[in-house]
Length: 464
Image 1 (tube, rainbow, N blue to C red):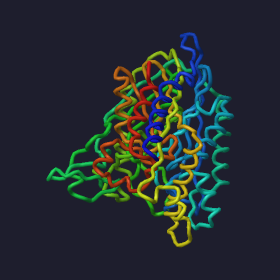
Image 2: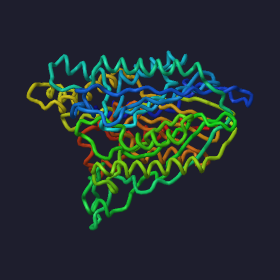
Image 3: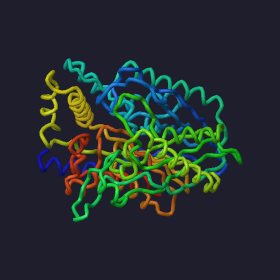
Image 4: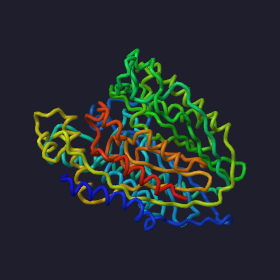
């Protein structure tokens, strides 16, 4: 992008976060007499065998444990708001909008009021409908997702949502709890003994130096936001920032260790809907504490479960007196360099000689480029309950954005879910570009300069 247009793009993006926020804010009733209600829903969204996994890197062969979409519908504000977590790797572009539109219709609300977050487990699918059509049109061997299954899954979740509305319950109180998670998360970035910066601490790691280095920049707290009808708990939303993988890539479908921890909590409290949201963890993995063995999945699940249980015990209840919704538009600039990230570069990869997964990556880039070229912004929504806020950020945002959100409202309980609209891939901070973060060689479809735009959107979404 030429320098002049790049400068204009940045100015337009930053301005949109501040000026359009007011236009798209949805004022909700803040009166203490308002009647808030909650309906919880759950639906199985396990992929069929032979389906693309992690965007087409391999195909599903068996099911270790099922995948679910779990969420709640909150009413009592100006419009119903849906919060839903899906045990998929990512939901992108048209697929993300399809989820929001169908669930919005089921809940009787608007697209922007449906907050869809993927847990980002890798033994699960990426949904990108346009990318799949691009692969088909170019007669490629790669496959990102099955279009018919995707629609079936979305409709199944919508049906569960509609059914849940028949048994909604009053909400009188919020519950706020948190606990430190021990020996799970570590930043990809760490320092070698000579002071050199390394970024190679992935989800599984047997590198002694990476294991011995400190955790790095993480958010050590697991937060649980709960909703109550008097003394009766209705739903518990737990949130932690870590790549949710112990081992993956063999064809087993799995919600991995967060899914196991969530299931244990559901068994503890059968009448309380347990929902887990992955935080901003593009650069946070279990690598320091995970050698990648099958046995360690249960170990990591146990540590996460213990924090969930402790956060529940730590919970303090407050009257629910408001539910204000705001959505801020965000524009991120597509990446052109190196050459494979440009439109022409990606189109050249859609040939039979290219490996199937490389074809899939090219198709996902082109899908994102078409969406970006249309001028459609990414929605950054926030739900403000007064003493607590729920913020949804896009894609594989680095953990520093979650920490920034908490710093914007230091006197409040800020829960930040990542992996909303996931088309951009990794959204790094500028330091990562300067230090040549090796993870940005692929799965990052945004240009340098995203940090300022992300922070401006966060501040606008969370403003009092």
